[in-house]
Amino acid sequence: GDSVTQMEGPVTLSEEACLTINCTYTATGYPSLFWYVQYPGEGLQLLLKATKADDKGSNKGFEATYRKETTSFHLEKGSVQVSDSAVYFCALSDSRDDKIIFGKGTRLHILP
Amino acid sequence: DTGVSQNPRHKITKRGQNVTFRCDPISEHNRLYWYRQTLGQGPEFLTYFQNEAQLEKSRLLSDRFSAERPKGSFSTLEIQRTEQGDSAMYLCASSPRGGMNTEAFFGQGTRLTVV
Image 1 (tube, chains in turn brown, blue):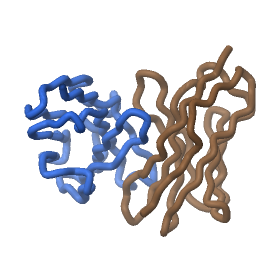
Image 2 (cartoon, chains in turn purple, cyan; image 1 turned 90 degrees about the vertical axis):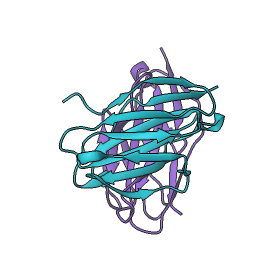
Image 3 (cartoon, rainbow over the protein chains, first blue to last red; image 1 turned 45 degrees about the vertical axis):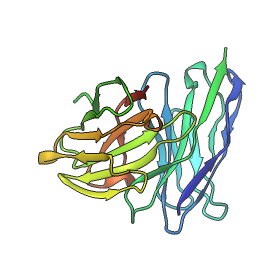
């Protein structure tokens, strides 16, 4: 079945460092890809998405590009802030099933 | 609109008791989803509704679990004869007609502890 694999955390960085969280997927169809974020004490929120190959999703300085050839959707940010500390989930949705499949999540700590 | 609302936020119950959770989706969202999340894991799909119709149930959902969405508005998730393995965060999400390919809005969850 469809699945998502993302790098294990926790990831600890200093403020203004560069961030990459790796994500790869397995899908039989042509999924949409997402990054969701969960800030402490809050519910899951959509951070960005991409619906077809070579699309780039972006929001709040984060970017991810849908790479069909490598089945990847890595999350990147050039300069992280303390407020970016959260758990990040890579996810996919296959239009045939209409549900989201999540990775296990990566906890990010940003030190001031 | 205040987003997806889940009640209660926390529930502690003794093994063998029944529990019921409620989810109020964003108004006019016709799709409603239930997920379960355990510590260190991503959310796992349980079931979803389009309006009042339950369209899919995960194999994770044993016969002790039942979900309803009367009148296509709020939804309830009931767990009968709870077991310690049921301890988890139960998440509800809703999305508009386009389904989860567009965007899903999640509630803050109900944390269940079975003692």
